[in-house]
Length: 193
Ligand code: 5GP
View: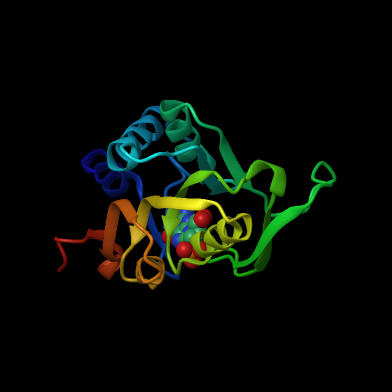
């Protein structure tokens, strides 16, 4: 997705540990027009299939997810990372190791929001080792909901996540695919040095 790649090139900052900082438009300040474009792209890629719910994980997945849900007129459910007193009900949960925070989290959704007849599109901001998406897939398995696919804004294709997801037979689409951070520059798939 050219507009996303251009923004990554212009505003992305490569940090130690293969982390891309995109705080200008996605992970801190959010550009709603760009998020809407991302939502439109996910609708183009997945919209021909039946989708009844968008599932993501707080917090950075919410912006692209909500635009996708808005365009498809379906609810957006985000898994929470901290157990909340407002979530007293039965939960579906999974253990997820956070790539950026280097901590193990339990992510959870209330079971009443994910039903056996749901057709779920999973959306997230980044795909690295696939921990977050794998946790969301596990939550869908617990609910016996059908997973339509996984839509990712920025995939770091040199890390293990994409293979981990597609090896499970899941339809994965990523809008910007990064091949490497050689010389602290972003190199997209197809333009490797
Ligand atoms: P994974 O679970 O696939 O290992 O990592 C994906 C999650 O970690 C995303 O939800 C995202 O929040 C965070 N993440 C992974 N890599 C990066 C990165 O390079 N930059 C930013 N900003 N977040 C990342």
